[in-house]
Image (cartoon, rainbow, N blue to C red):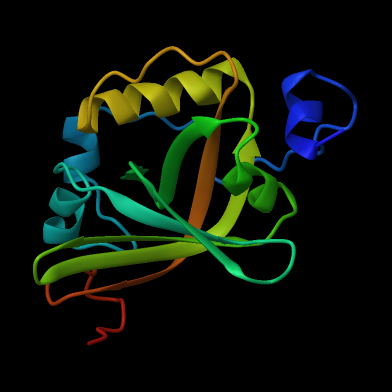
Length: 172
């Protein structure tokens, strides 16, 4: 049986077990509070950038060690980047093996990349929170009973001039 179909049919072969909870999970802030909060990684310009409508590329490592990059919508708050997706996708299978993920977004000369430890969440509260955040930034996503939330606990950020918090090293 293909690993994706095993997950879709709910068999014990689910690649999502065990699930690690990302630090900061469960903290909800209003959008006003997010704007007012000092962010460890992003400047106010960077925080605005991750609020505006920009798509991104999510990169994970495939089981053969190659980079798997796909377009995604993502949200960011409190050092956590969130991506919603179907549970049996290749990005979920890659993330379920543990490791890191990188999300890069570009708009003309402005760009931002965040990376960190990735975890997969199937629980209804985490998924609903990620969907709510996604809908606020992009649009209400279609119903997907297999939806999961990928949470990236950011430990590194790079970006164009003005995107990073003053404590972050500025990179070209």
